[in-house]
Length: 402
Ligand code: ZN
Image (cartoon, rainbow, N blue to C red):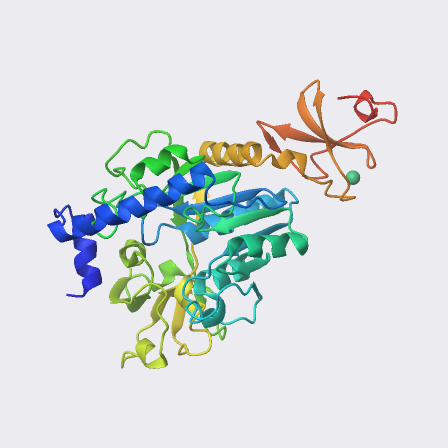
């Protein structure tokens, strides 16, 4: 049994951690609390950048659907017409030990070993600018200099140096906080009480039974994927269902591979699981199993295998989604706490908008185009079709109207 497997057992299968792990966790906890206290007292300085910052992260180690949520959030912000950039530490790149504060701008041709698998995946899925650096303040400043008006910080919950407007914490809806202990006795990077201070808690794939604890205020996010894409781009997409009944090799180098295998099983496939460490760097031989069975991997693995994957490799992109009420609640909270209504621009002329009260509720007015964009339930609809044309004399157009 590997150290990793043994630790996972201690964290998630209710085993009481051995005394020496608890001693280490106690020492780790002191350091975490000291650091938080130093930031709270202003002895360690955090830096505010010239754009709202939305942090997406978690307080546990391991995968909790963070990348799909970042991709979803970038899409939502772009729908509002906001130029958004993602800053990330770039986990899984080979140069993390060597490079200190360089800023890498991720593009489609970057390699995962240079920029990190998650960073490349976010770039490929969103097309939005992604900046990788250990110095997230510098990365955010570079993004703003390039034109970003909103920053999404991927996995920045513990990176207190970057001042933030909104914090979204993801919690694994099945494993929860495990045994609730700090590292290394449990999976927690920070004490559980940290969740009390965040703007939104998102439970990923809570399934039927929510994890232990009180999660009544949490929003629920689902992850789903139905289409398999060929990794080497030589074939058309196929539905996952079309592989139903087939034996396949299932390759996963992610924080929680069990979820991936379960997805394949629930679609009727018979996966032969192949687990690799998170951010694993694949060799071609590791994707060849001496038979002709299809190989199905996660999207995060696939971005690392584009040049080495055999023809029969497929990946399963997953997307985050929310129930309508949870989606609106999350968006409303983000819009309000990051004060995004103040920086929205007209989708037509890119000019400034003014928030005003209309008979039907709040509207965002573009005086140049004489349009009033509705704000429904706290969320603006930035579509020309949805906007109400204003007559030249309309009081909403007058300069002095508050
Ligand atoms: Zn306009």
